[in-house]
Image (cartoon, rainbow, N blue to C red; front, side, top):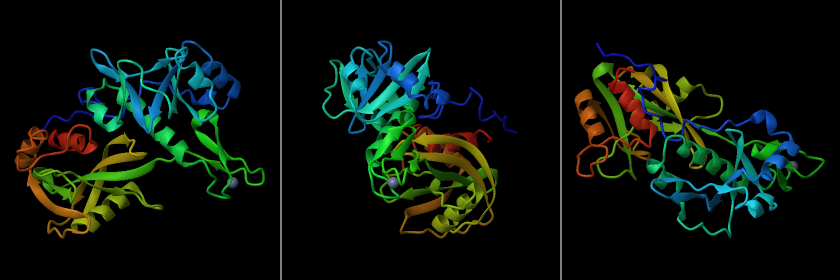
Length: 313
Ligand SMILES: [Zn+2]
């Protein structure tokens, strides 16, 4: 009998991009005066992003390269889209896109996905929030209803059309993706590999949810489409913000109703059943390029779903 650990227990390692330590202080965001006061404080901090790369400090350990309110006084004051991330110990934290700002000495602009494995817990979550929001503002300068310019509102959590006759409000998007481990009893599960995967890499099946679908329905549809397997019961395991550009990965475990696989070879190169022992070995080998089969690395929620399944989730 496996000892079950509740999914929210500290015994589970945090899933990268979750665990944001900032208080989003959503109740203050509509107060333009309050936001203005925050942006003028010397204690305020700003995260610059250049082409969606984050400003990272390389000291003893890499960390977010926050600029102080004094270092960032011009960037905090400049016109354009300044996004409020939240408060920490009463200090306001902002992010913005910067094209001409050069990284400070000891700092570099880094791809969020590349630097994440080296960051302390919570820092990657702040980068996820900042990257998704800054990217959304960069791509939503025009109203989808009437084509006029939009302007940032509510400290970055809305854009409003500048055409008075339209006035449409647009909100930052988050695109839900179901990602599921399908089990056939407790001793084997279904994994697949996409055409672009590194040699030997297999992962949980996944796909975007569609409008008008429940989680369970999306899981069943995707598994049927990609592997030809019917799924019965579906249980939720954990979720992960995935800021490339702005998804929410919803991790589930589904129970297979049959076992004859029919691969959708337009989407996947291979789908197959793996025994529990094989999956344990794949998890041990996630970082081993030589292994014949390997699981995804810990940056991906698939790694954590598989781990929890092995642990009896
Ligand atoms: Zn409009």
